[in-house]
Length: 365
Image (cartoon, rainbow, N blue to C red):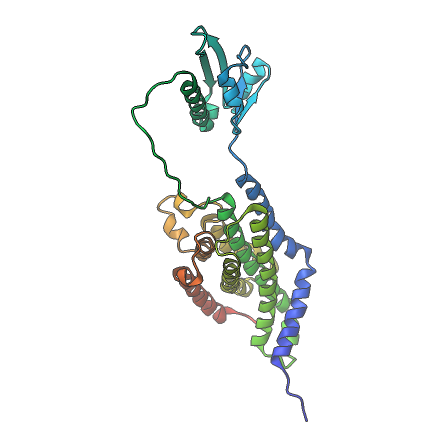
């Protein structure tokens, strides 16, 4: 009795072989996982740091004064002592925000009085207001200590619990989304172009494996590999830099679902690129036309709202924008998959359109 050929076993065999080939490719692993991790590490460390204002200390400054000690106690202020000419040059070039000169004035013995001179240049204009605000706060606290006076008002402050929106909470979803887009477009395009070029697809046709199962096998291997990458990226962001997962494991699973959903949609672009490319050298330019605008405009590094008004409608038409928004809403805001229906709907619409076009132009040989 003849044994019926199993299309599913054939598909899983293709998946296993393809996944093994991916894991043995250093460039694929580095670009898909290493590249996003590098950005996450950089922005993770930046997000945990504070703004540092470098201030030069002029010769003759009273370093025993209350004002100097108050500035030295502020973590975001770094006081620099160096030769006057070098200090002046650094200020003009923006390496120092300002140069401060503090001298004591004659006053009542119990109440100190100081003359504070601040010199700055237009090169340090981005931080001079921060320094002046800190200096004013230090002086006000010293005034409160030595010059008691009644106040015209009483401030009653109430602090309610909240979540701090860290740099990593914005950057990680954007890098994860771009990693999925890049892997889907470039990986799929190069793979199927190579399978046609090397006549592997033609050899598959000599077997009982149906075309749909060939596609599903190759697709499944990439889904599994990207799932591993997403787990690594989200896990490192959460445990190393405190990336917010509001509902813990539930949010983590929902992030993985969004990753797989976005990857399936983006692979349609890869199929399309592999079909329209005339040779291997034309794949990167075509793929970059699809991926680079989304990398720059879809809220990967900065909010879409920060862009000019005339450009925002273009940004909000890009599929990566909606995947990034869904990631951030689920991870930080604590929403669930059924709360991001608009984002999933737009991604689905993009998927339907791109796969409809791909089916028309896809080449098997």
